[in-house]
Image (cartoon, rainbow, N blue to C red; front, side, top):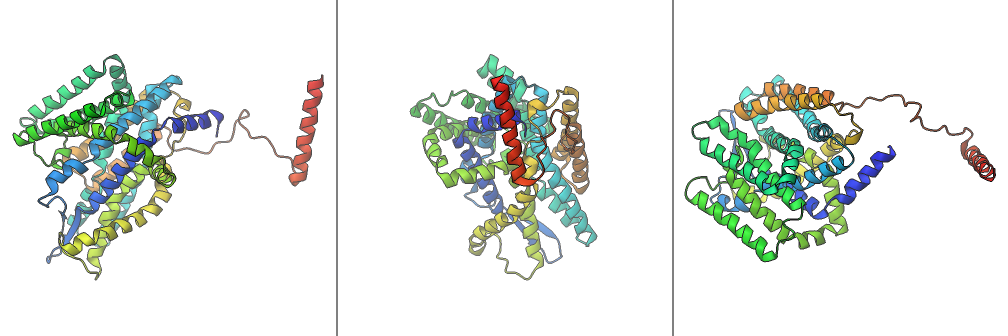
Length: 455
């Protein structure tokens, strides 16, 4: 590792906020646990398979999801870390193309491995005679996390532009995004496909709240002020859902997103700042810090793979003579901790095998600025993502996505090739003859250095 890269890694680590990292870990854990309570495949007598959202069918689900819908909070924390990362790169003379390249590779490389594995697995299932309807159901369900990848990429890749607007006028930038969100919500009845534009506007607005937090605006507020903001945001949520302008089910509001998620993000940001002293204390506990550090370095791999593994595990259980309690029964709920534990066990080897794809290939500032290649990679990545959002996932689209993502990685030089070291970077030769010879060599170098100093 070059000296510059090592220094950069140390500075990035030093700049991280342990409380923010802990919040991101909790968000990821809640998503994994929540999905384990939703996926319920059902084998019917005629051989067809359907899935039920057991958690979503509960009468008490709607008020509870207001608390546990953590996706807005994840985008808020992504805004905090993303803005800090962009500012560090810019201070070293980095460019927007370098930032975009780093963000694309960080997210697309793990996703490409998932897509390739899903295509191979589903093709194998079809070759073994699995009903095409079941294959389509598995493709749709297992690929659900990919919508997050597209939305998160759209928000993160806009950070250089949004950061510039934020530097000029933070409140005007936030107000402009909110205006776009409301405009799309007002027109979505007449133009249904326009609603997907809020995959960009909503999450960029939520990310902009993270910019305010990164600048310390929320930390300067009093506890009573933060509490008032949280109450006002929830009151506004109650008004717009009570009047029927939006549904109160935040899971329905998630895709395509709408104004309710921005209001929820405001409430969650205020709650996070209120809990910051407790979060900071927990993050200082050694074992918690280590757990958060390990999980954080493989968070995208865990997020992308947990639902395909959960779907595969649940589907296989349908084919074996194993007790399967009915969805929603007391026995089914008591089995959820076992399901979560089994899912974690499956995720461990997957994270070990594919987690390194999240590591940085080269330091962003070491990449020669090629804006045209970065722009082409963005287009190639979002072509299958847009198709999936409008037409749904299929086996063919998963294969096309694998090819497009691989092409984007190739454009950005994300497939590292082993090269012979140049003359300026060739490592020094070690003297032959074992430790004794190396010790003699060091003594000779030391004597030469002393002699030159005397001269």
